[in-house]
Length: 173
Ligand code: ATP
Ligand code: MG
Image (cartoon, rainbow, N blue to C red; front, side):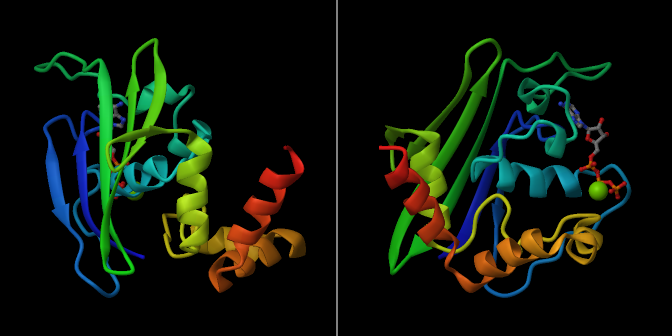
């Protein structure tokens, strides 16, 4: 799977809709302190299903919604779209959160469960906790990880994590 575009609206500091093209290869994000580099990575992870508000540096998940500044009022929703290419087909994954109404996901315009998005990315060996996304302090986390955690990271990198998600899914049915 290749992520080709990222559209962000109302997410953290990205109050106005931003449309980013992600070229093949390694992508680095550079800019002055506080310009939104980490927010960008968080937007990507959030859309892939990240559910820990703390790992989004917030107290609750609604903290990802643009909170307003001295000159601009807060937003009442945040929406991020990932445009990805899978085996030659384009897929659009959307996550949206509204104040007081929680999160909703769509894949190619269809309402889906969080689990469906998790499976889509798990099968593609990427996802919210993918080692392919290296955010600030993450290098240290890999080094400090317990063996079992490091094994999970390596399994994900090797592309077999999707099997475990499917097994858990099957076991709960
Ligand atoms: P550094 O180089 O210091 O790591 P950075 O480029 O990673 O900086 P971010 O942490 O992505 O910067 O962005 C921080 C900015 O995002 C701060 O100005 C903060 O006020 C703003 N921000 C975070 N959450 C929200 C929100 N919900 N609404 C509006 N602004 C927000
Ligand atoms: Mg940062």
